[in-house]
Image (cartoon, rainbow, N blue to C red; front, side, top):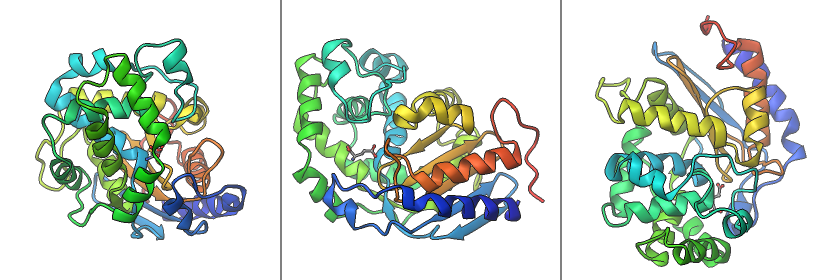
Length: 309
Ligand code: GLU
């Protein structure tokens, strides 16, 4: 396993140059394009790491999985999916074209319009501090904090998300105020995690929502099934279809360079690589997962049991 991970890691490093760090949130533009880290944790307790796996970066869009989990738990499946769809959008993560012209609901909770909607559902029940605590729990990482610089930088440059939120409010989808929803959403995106925290969260999902540390259930089984399915179909922006074919693992990426993947019933993978492809996914992260999936037969529809020797 360690050897195959190393080969995948090297293949990932080779494509870093072909991507760029995100700059539309100026603070993200300060990331080191060449950073790369990976952490894989298996349910039988093995841990494989390489590179910058303990370096902190902002979780960005991966927080959408956490918000969706909390929203279903608190507001219920029916309420959440009366406000947001479950279809891939085929549009970029911050698009509002389809939302305005063709659809009355955000396509899915993994793009900005959908996540602003789940944030608005949470606003009456959860403060950001509550969400931070929840995140620490599911990521098994007590050291997660909000990166204030990134938060301020994004809020100063949030015209597009604000426009999406106002459009949603005009359609009666956002009910609890644009400002409060946008603030909660942006704070969630600004939480600082590591590739290891993401591997922990992915491992929790791989284990059906039961903590592998103390065997306590943190997320209902039915909700975990929903999260993994939506990650598989919508987790990689408008690259989700191709990624599902090539890698075949429920995954979620963020423009901060984070990427998490679930090897169901077996392992969680967390990656940090801030050089992004044109769709906003970690370019090295996608390459690593593609190579790893091929070498280790990890694709959901093809694999045999993972060989960790
Ligand atoms: N905070 C980012 C935004 O709203 C998240 C984008 C992402 O990671 O996809 O644009």
